[in-house]
Structure formats: structure tokens, C-alpha cells
Length: 148
Image 1: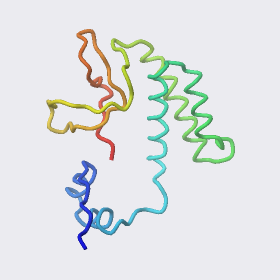
Image 2 (image 1 turned 90 degrees about the vertical axis):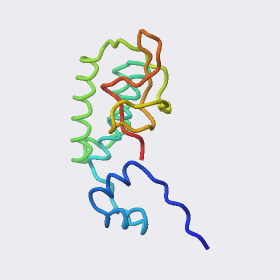
Image 3 (image 1 turned 30 degrees about the vertical axis):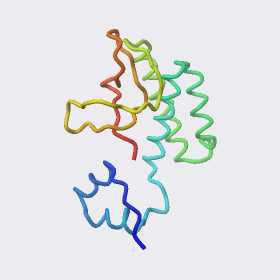
Image 4 (image 1 turned 135 degrees about the horizontal axis):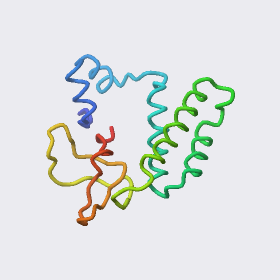
């Protein structure tokens, strides 16, 4: 019986560069933490807010999404911290980027083509934009690492 091939990801190689034993535990032995890190929860919340913002640019809708994703923010201290920070960040983002010089074409589009910087990897961007020249590409401020 042969082992299933391991899917190589940017996260795996980044971890390998820092700690080979951690790669063995995570990818070979499939040992994962029982609880997800709180910062990862918050990062997921902010990414959902940004996606909702760039779909319709409706601040009230994004704030309602934060309420929906953190329903116990009045009782739970962790949710309360996330809720307040997400509200503040979203409102500041809406003011700072009320208008953009690009049109959002779609979210979750696969990026194809050459990348200029060696640290950039091919992957999925949160959204793809069209600038005045008509070319589709991720906006430099918001280009993200590939999903892992």
C-alpha cells in the first residue's frame, strides 16, 4: 500500500524553513492544535468584512455582518475584543477607501501569469481588480498570499 502524496503548500515550506520537526508533526503525523488561535479567528473575520465591503460597499451591511459573526460579544470577552476592533477597523477602512481607482470584478479569482517579486506566489486573491488600462490584476495594497 502506498502513502497518499503530500500536497505541497507555501505554508508547509515556510514552516519547513523554520522547523522541520513541526512539518513532521503537522503534515506527516497530522497533529494539530485542539483549539484554533484567537488571532486566526480575528483574521478570518476581517477577511470576510473586506470581502463584503468590496462586493457592495455598504458599511451598514458589513457592520451587521460583524454582529452576526460575533453574536455573543456582550457576554464573551474574546468576542467583545474582536467585535470592537473589527468595528473600528471597518469604519476606518470605509473612510480611507471610500472611493477606489479600480472596479472589483470578482472575489476568489485564481491569479495566473508571471509574478515580479520572488516572494509573491501564484494563488487565490481575495478580489481581482480592473484598472483604467483594462487589465485584470490584484490591487498591490491588497494582494494576498495563497490560501493554505
